[in-house]
Length: 556
Image (cartoon, rainbow, N blue to C red; front, top):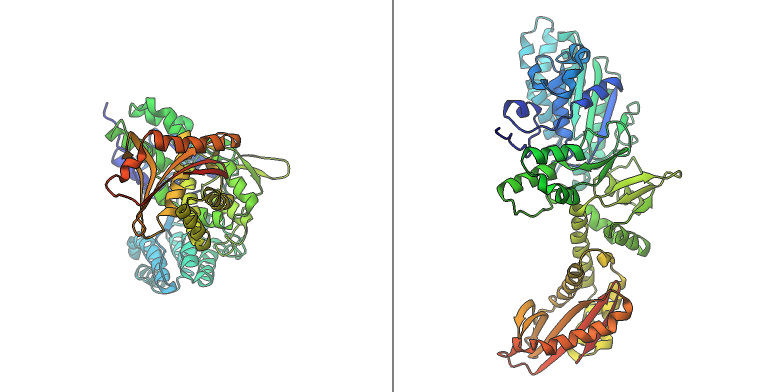
């Protein structure tokens, strides 16, 4: 049996049927939506969790003239009465605001018009309608050309559709908060808030032509900013029990997908890297983007290793901001997260882009909302047990925190000067003091991972500090004598050579012995041979052992 194509980046629901892509059936969302209708339904999920595809599914289901065969064999097709009443029965206006990302307000306004124009163009045939007045047709013409009243454009279009079809309209707005994020980044946030508030206000409040509306986004933006002109939307976030299985892949769905491509043997590594989210009370949710990309990699090469597929589509700057704002307590909480434990925090469900980095409390909530954290439940005081969902996100955290910490170390020019002086002098005690100071400012996440991971972190820290010295040649893991030295340094100006052997100690009481073993290893393995052709005036050996935020240095 021929295997279906993997849907990498496909978010047009019709393509799955027409072009033979593998589809994870999420049509049960339609029944849940119709069983619990709200006038304005808002769904917030992180990026790449299937929001756009679900919006396309809703459009294909409801819109008049749809290809009803798109739903053959899917879960919703078993709901015969519901399909008879709703399948292909409504005019639908579908817009995405994903591309409203201008560097200026004028550019963004033009991009918002483009979304409206595209929606209006899909109803160009109504210019021949005998049910519309010349004024209606003129309005439709203006909407297709991007002229007229942008703020009232969706309301005007829905009124025209209602008049022609005699049926109220369904409005779908995908990535509703994307314009606000870009406006915040580019300095025109207040003007965009005003525009979006009016744009939504006209379309979603006091619109007699509206049946229901569905919006998706990443953040549940505070009603004081853009929903102030609306009745409270029926909002469904990652902590709400309703709709919990319709965004993201469940464990059973991932297992079936792996089986469909004869990849069952990769179930546990897939789970380890990409599982771990909890939506409402539904546990073991995977990011669809990761799973599909991983399956594609495996089909090309069964020896492929997992990658951070999500890293390039998410906003990683939040982690850096979080780490930079962290006090000593928060740094220890981050360390807990990175070693697989949980921290208890109260989540702020409604934020604005303006205040999302105003406090650590807001940043905790932002990291949860954007998918860097998930939860394991809530206690009676409303505190959520937050954790990092999987190895993929854990590695993103570590990478970004490594970058932040090394930058922080390099900013401390006085501390680095003392560090260099201690190396030049072979002063083990002064070198130890410098390293302990910098470690005290760090996030000690190296409790987790393998022994090699821990040594690699500390080795990387030292290399980062050493490479800022312009007249030093720094090499790592180079063949020397009978093995490979961790770090070899040559002072080009003074013709001094330094060899550093890095050790990780399981317990603080082992630091001295491990640092001494570093010196012994340098001598035993004859690492000095690396410099045999450089004829250094002085060669110094350093054994440096680390345990969490403590270190011990021996020198000779």
